[in-house]
Length: 392
Image (cartoon, rainbow, N blue to C red; front, side, top):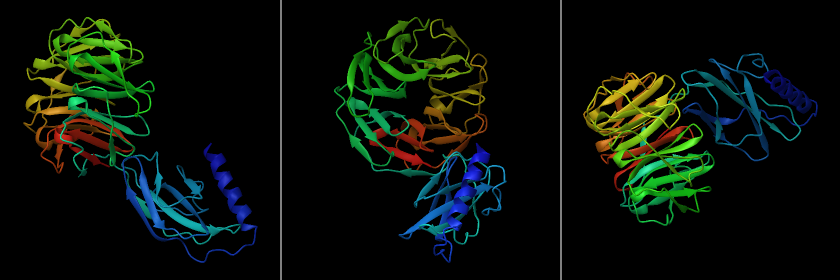
């Protein structure tokens, strides 16, 4: 595929060169490259009547056609400013150069190379305007947009996690968590509330079959798994029809995550449950007695967070060990995108590449943060009194 792309670029270049039209005398102006998470954003001064090219490859410089044999070399034609270049490797330096052509002309002069190094998001946060007075308890991403839910049935949607629209949810019950999986959003809340949508716009109430408060809903394999008070565990393949499972626990169960075929559920008093089939559950020791509020799975295993800054990790979901978080703030949520990010009381935010070594970063808010999600190359967190913030 790579060789085919290279030969296609060379063929287009040769075709344009043969047309004999006027060639631009200079390279594009005011080119800038801004690094993101696994991506960069390329901007320049775009002039009408010209077609733009970008050439890039790992390293400190790139040229066309001289770099076409370089491993990782790519080019795009007919682009517009701004242009996001995706699928880059974090912590790897890339070089970018640009050129332009007129209709039917060959490519003009190629710009000097500019370099940028993509890096995991999570270090720098931008706080948006409060969405409402309602506390926001959950947020999910479906590949094109976001949905956030909260107290009193609050529901908001957004295409970019910057501009949000309030929608009627059809319930006044608190909504505590939301996930997108299997082509459907599913939100859960108090009194066994379940709400579903396939388009972020139209929402339908479903019956969970229970009246317990549901704290969390996650995708676990091909199923949804909802966790709640009094040891409540529910599973569903479609988010509409739910089956209660025997957890063997009476604890308030708060969240779940799956890694390498094993699902782990967190709960009050350091509770941890593990299962490989969502049917049979076993209690495992966490090493802490604090309430565990959330759990996430990364490339090396699980990390769970909880009250008082407690944090525990496990490679297999069965053997757990406490990890120093560096904070006494209670942590409410954790996700793994390109790294682990945890959020909590007073705007606390922690990041970690490996789940073991953690760094505290400034959030720009003192509002307690209760949920976050990774999507569009950024983390988005929500929380108290409509708080919402983004880290690219």
